[in-house]
Image (spheres, one colour):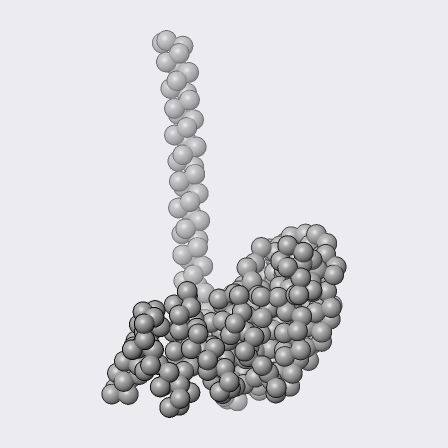
Length: 378
């Protein structure tokens, strides 16, 4: 036989063998995975009956634990309890936590948090956070300084769910400085700290506001009082997030603080403060909206027009009228809506504009007036 042909056949045989082994491994993994899913569903059905009886006080903690403790696959137990921990509160949550503790789930993941590999430690941080295991907080805090973004993210999520509001600022700085999360992603994680974090949010804004650049300088000249080092959070971003959360939680007593913050705020922070006012449904005492209706940044003008309804400042009506010819449609629309809600005087301004020479003002005024009539007939 030709030696070249012989060598080619050997190579083909080896390649076919490797492909068959890989295909067999994939099929085996899929079969084992399907088997595990089937076994888990069977277990979950049994556990659900036991767990619901336990919540309804038809079973004691000891009996429920005895009937569920035969299975030592802790990931299965976590997968089963996770949806309940998301929604249960109060006594039911504490009973679920007690059962998880008796089943060894908490201790198992505390060990993983201390000694496991990176994926196991990340999962452990999330599990212990969901179970609000405050004893694990000191073990999670060092993970915020990890060079691995996965561990930083998991530790921050665990701390946020744990209910320890004092860890808010370390978690926020770590997420902004050591992960690739967007602004929205960081805000969503930090919102899990809950309304109990309001006092710390206020203190954080006071602290970080000292490092903000002077808003009275031009954008080219504006520099922060202390530049963040590599891996540190930008004070402006951190203040914006905390402002959003104050509005989201409607923290009582925060309006005055936000009013003072406007004195040091740049354009972006100003937008977040105005959005917070919208969530509060009110503005600080003696708040003057007029400078913001004339702001150079259209987003500020847009939110200012929406905030007007909480001030009712009649002296601002001429400025709202000017905004009917703004270059941005959203600004024009919200200015017209504000005028429409300003009673007879505001409505008369819109009617006059529909008959005026400015086509832009006439168009938005007609649209809002017609829209109002349609909505009233519905």
